[in-house]
Length: 591
Image 1 (cartoon, rainbow, N blue to C red):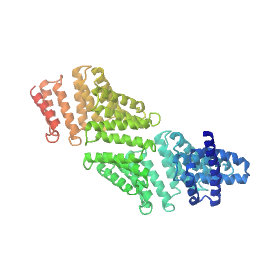
Image 2: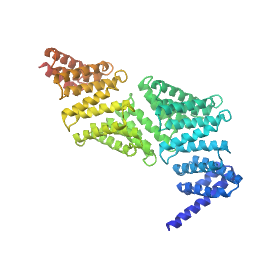
Image 3: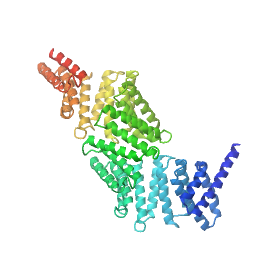
Image 4: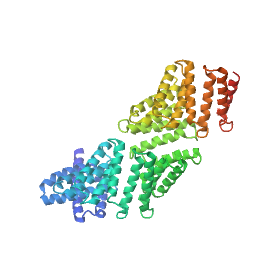
């Protein structure tokens, strides 16, 4: 029975293919004729058609005259172009059919005999592999780049300037997405390709193409690693604003929305200007884009913009912090209505991870439950973010999961800290100092904090591990490069020295005092009032316990630092911290 059904299906495919190619030849590939025909036969437009297309063309081509074979190859090429853009059916299957068709056409329309058509096929194969869903993403992108480069070999600038420029743009797009090779170098390649295309596509002669390239260039500058980050972002803003000179909402609503959303991405990252205002610009841009990007018309773009809007709300400085986080959570949850694990696994994982971060910071609701939601979402993300497939995302999610376990209120505290330490250590397998210096330093610092709080194992050894990790973090967190992170790490290192069991107690307290004083070089009352007050309070505690120097002078220093802390730790603003410092101050005065 199964064999009979399989034979029937093959027969249906074999009947369908000649009808398709006949319709293409008679209509000259008119989409208004071909697409309704494909829609009627939608059940047959699947992975089975891929193999049957190969079998059928391999069987019939040797039987045809040269001219007939060439005509069929042209029909297959047109069909591949049409199926690649076909809006219905399974997208992955459509791309596989297109690839099989292009590869078939290239056997007849060879580089030697049909150079122009062969170049078109190579460019089209590049586009198909760039968008391909089936197979490994890294390999698909490498193949796309190879096909584009092959197309350029037979597309001279002088003879075919527009086609040459189009391939340059496509090659730039592939380099932007490229996984293999050095990321910074890939982006530089992309910028070079886009700039090359702009030699042909000028604003006066080709305004629409020029605008499209400006949009791509803006994306490349936003992601650029080489050069000064803030300068790159300003270049990105300029490129997107150039794009909007042509892409108006009235004339090009979809392109306008895309560019407005991209501009929102840059404003969310922007270094120059006021940070709060930049985030407002980002939120406003995303909200404008959503006027065009509706869920019904553009579900994927709608979901992506909802996700980006959520990220902007999560970082927002204006408005009520608790409300901003609620907005972020709501937008992430909306995005997940489209970003399902089955349809968009990578986007689903990224949104789960971001939703987890919002729950971890949430101010409303039960804190313990929020952290459970965060942990659950991070664990969901890790179902897709494996070390093999997404090493950087896997490491980032492991690090964030560790932070959630370190703060977890439910479950056994000792076990939660073990989970945190284990996840930080997993993250460090990818976050090496050489490859990811900043992430490595941050993870070392967080690992140190977990060791400082660890309940299992030997307390003295845990503190040694904490001190060692803080010192490693300070190799990257210098005062010049990362002043705030340097100050925070100095303060944490001081606390570890103040509790240290091993070594000379008097020397440990000297180290603690020295590190607190270093932290206060950055933690000024004006710039970081709360961190300044906390560090003054901790410095006071170290002076109160100090073994070296004059005892009376040490106590005066302690009293003075507690009193400084109380300038910020008021009863109204920080009642708990105020009470603690008042208690410590009274105890110190009583010594």
